[in-house]
Length: 110
Image (cartoon, rainbow, N blue to C red; front, side, top):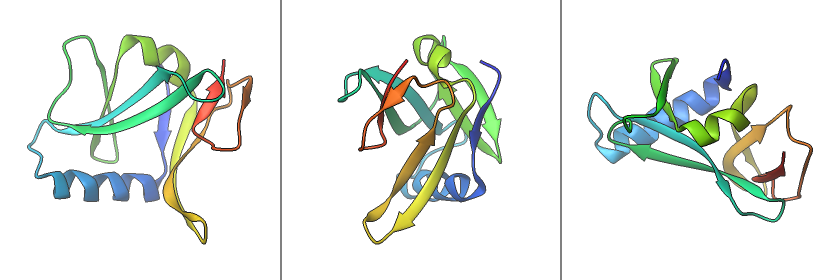
């Protein structure tokens, strides 16, 4: 995987979540692609205490990012942002490799 990007807003929000989690020095954000969702795949984000042995580990803006081998093939070029609107707040994904998506914004086809 060459590039996965988090916007400065997303990095700040992840840092807040890691602090709230009471996480240690090796903690980071797991970014995963999981089978499911209304378009075939869905994104998953989770704060974890450390990486798994086969994870790729990135560091973006001081945040460690853990990506498993299955997910890595779908995340090249993905940008993760944190957006707030009248409809709510949350992480959004821009995947230039997705062949399609759905209205929820967290599901895609490859």
